[in-house]
Amino acid sequence: MENKIRVMKIEKAEPMYSPKYNEFESYNKKLVLEDREHWLSKKADIEANFDILRKFRNTRFFELLVDDEAVSHFVLQTFNMQRSYISWVYTRKDYRGRKLTQNFLYRVINAFQEKGYTGSFGLRVEKTNLAMCRLIENLGFEKGETGISVEKISDEQDEQEYVLTKPLRG
Image 1: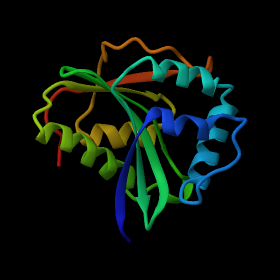
Image 2: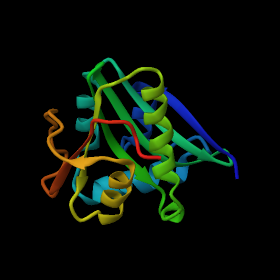
Image 3: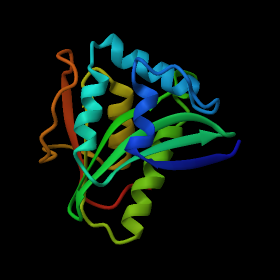
Image 4: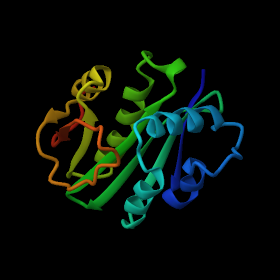
């Protein structure tokens, strides 16, 4: 099983998530459709969320490919050398419970830290998503204020903020 990370600008990822878009590259079709269905079930305005993401210059979309098939992704916004924000973390249901997403987040954050980034990483997790809460706590994230104002994309969200301010746990 070979794992690769693909990085792209948000503008390239955006069209895939539009409810109007129905043509996909074969490597990511399952992931995109499952994630899109997840957000639409929460009555989230996906296109409005991309409007928010496009406001920031340093926004990158990361995908984890296993045997050339996308199985997990997230968005990373770097506001300055002191603060970054992670959002839209999603893993296909048939790949959950394998620590793939934990290792994926670790590899990306660790690469930033190895290149000298000393700032914090923040994210929000739905309080009912206990598996994700455990995953990021295992990486060293702690409950706390991210210092980043984020517009909710759904009224149904009840979230906990987490922040990582020191080197990752291995």
